Amino acid sequence: MSADQRTSPGSSGEPAGAAGMPGASGAGRLEPVERHLERVLSAIRPLAPLDMQVLDAHGCLLAEDVTAPGNVPPFDNSSMDGYAVRAADLAGAERRTPVVLTVLGDVPAGASDLPRITPGTCARIMTGAPMPPGADSVVPVEWTDGGSGGDAAADTMAPATAAPVLTGPSGGPAGDGGGRVRVFRQPEYGSFVRRSGSDVERGEVVLSAGTVLTPSRIGLLCAVRRNLVKVRPRPRVSILSTGSELTHPADEPVPGRIPDANSFMLTAAAREAGALAFRAGCVPDDPAELTETLEDQLIRSDLVVTSGGVSVGAYDVVKQVFADLGEVSFHRLAMQPGKPQGFGTIGPDATPLFALPGNPVSAFVSFELFVRPAIRRMMGMEQVHRPVVRARLDAPITGSPEGRRQYARGRYVPPMPGEITGTVTPVGGSGSHLLGALARANALVVVDEWTTSAPMGQLVDVMLLQE
Ligand SMILES: Nc1nc2c(c(=O)[nH]1)N[C@H]1C(S)=C(S)[C@@H](COP(=O)(O)OP(=O)(O)OC[C@H]3O[C@@H](n4cnc5c(N)ncnc54)[C@H](O)[C@@H]3O)O[C@H]1N2
Ligand code: MOO
Image (tube, rainbow, N blue to C red; front, side, top):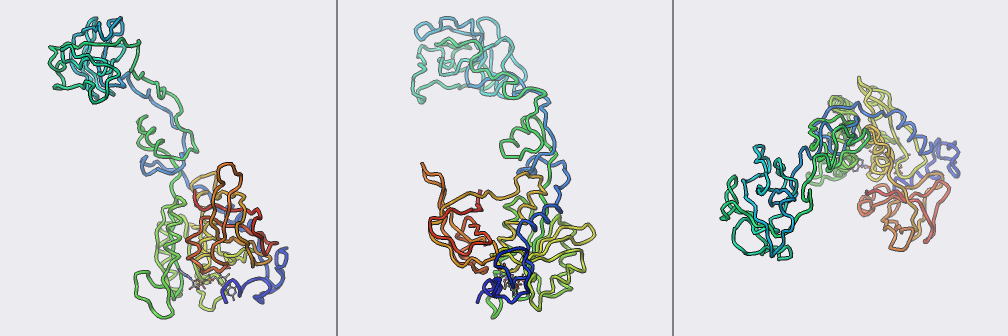
């Protein structure tokens, strides 16, 4: 008999008096999921903003408005490899009647010593290089003979392989053309010039407080010369498993003992939620060792997450240790999996602590429902919850415990083109040890407290576990 079956309301022999949950007689005081969520979120505050290097701030929430101190681009520059010209010089330039200009020199990207372009002259210019004074337009090299000085006409329609390229030593006149280039096409005034401020103008607010720093926004911060930004940091989360039965996954099998899955799984989940998560390992059911490990972790943690020892087992030393270290309360929630939950604070800085149930699926679902929102709240995120969508069951659900909201594992497929709702297939059973099924799931099917079964085809709420 699985833990769930043993503890299902009505079959567990628990004291009566459920918190208004139908069918929960004999289940003791089972609290609604929302009440626990409220308890958790009302105790968690966003972390104080810090100045961080832009790359370290990736994924964090901006805690200031960022204003551009100057224009982007900072100066007029060319968007093509070609020649910086005065458009008026090239009036009437065509393939049969090219205009010949004197090439004063090269302007590579990064140049600051620029030739002055006077009537009848031009400069060879590279993409991104500053426009030399006097020039107002750029002709791409494909519109010229590339400075060869010969009469091989460069056709704008010519295939790329046949198009002229800018060759010759940098800094000198172009090619063999004796410092002359033939231009076969008249540019419009200002063509191929990227104007200073055409992207961002000086004084513009480029990113507002509350924005999540994505890679492109980090690029923008650098473009406006910001190296440090004020953000809400990622919370440092320490995760440990408790239980004398646990071994390291790399260890040889030992009779009666099992590999620690939770601390690895929860550390990965915390990282995915945005935290800087450390796996602090697994600790046997020994009060002194657990106390010592927790005290070590407190120094570097904004949040501590443990799994195991929150039910009623005779060797559950966890509760006693938490009582000694701080104020952690234990609750029994009207949900399956994840009924037993501990939450509170420990240590001198009142560090928040989640004591999750040891069954791996229970620990995972509890993390999704309570810890992930807490991590996201600490990061200052507005949207702390997973999205919930409606989907059609494509197989029935049976045996959902009355009086407890079930979060059944499911595989969600989004709507096909032309359809409004997707479908969800329950995977595995309701056992809280079924990691194999959990690993195949990408969603949790929410079966409310009053429902024990749902037929195929029924619309249900589905919490999506993947972005
Ligand atoms: N008499 C009762 N027994 C149980 C109840 C109850 O109300 N009355 N509740 C059941 C429910 S529901 C759950 S959930 C579990 C929670 O138990 P604990 O939090 O005390 O966890 P443990 O007893 O330490 O472990 C439970 C189960 O999970 C395995 N486990 C634990 N840690 C890990 C880990 N890191 N990696 C992999 N597996 C782990 C452990 O070996 C047990 O099989 O209590 C029920 N019992
Ligand atoms: O049902 Mo327990 O609630 O397996 O987490």
